[in-house]
Image (cartoon, rainbow, N blue to C red):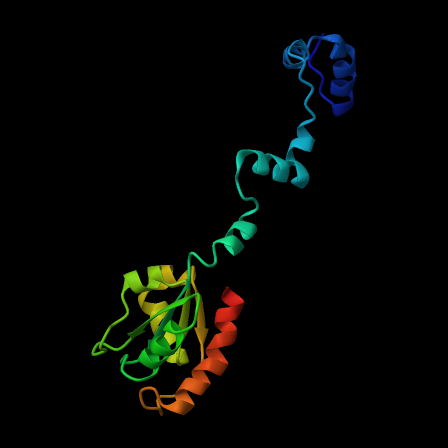
Amino acid sequence: MSHPTSRAERRALACKLDGRTDHRAQSFRRLGIEKDWKKLYWRKNKLHRARQIGKIWPNREWEKLMADAAPLRVLFVCSRNRLRSPTAEAVFNAVAGVEARSAGTARDADWQVTMDDIRWADLIVCMEDKHANRLRADFRQAVSHKRVCVLSIPDDYKFMQDELVALLRTRAMPLIRAQE
């Protein structure tokens, strides 16, 4: 008998050889196990199994439960880290569930942005487009996996000025709430 060349011939041969023994099926029958493998992957079965072994599944539910334990880490970035980003850090460190840091992109900044700052942050908030572009240029790979937002706040304010605080709350708070 020659090897079947078409799909129809292979199907016909498979029907003829259907009486052959399937050792895997025999071993399941011998042990009294009948598994329907596709049912193993149904959501209700996964949830049931997760409850049995004490796991929380899916991960979204786990993240909601752990939101209190792990605060949202926000990095505020401006040019020299003297006025806008330190103000934002002070304002948002007082918000429950948020941990804030500030840094600057300029070489003479009080605290210049480092790779550790970028790795630490869950959300990066820049005051102007030039800060976001500078981060993307200096830390291309690290920033590509992070959410970077721009508030478009010019450098016209003093540290903890009321207008700046109000502007930060109105523009940054929706971003932070969306991230949580």
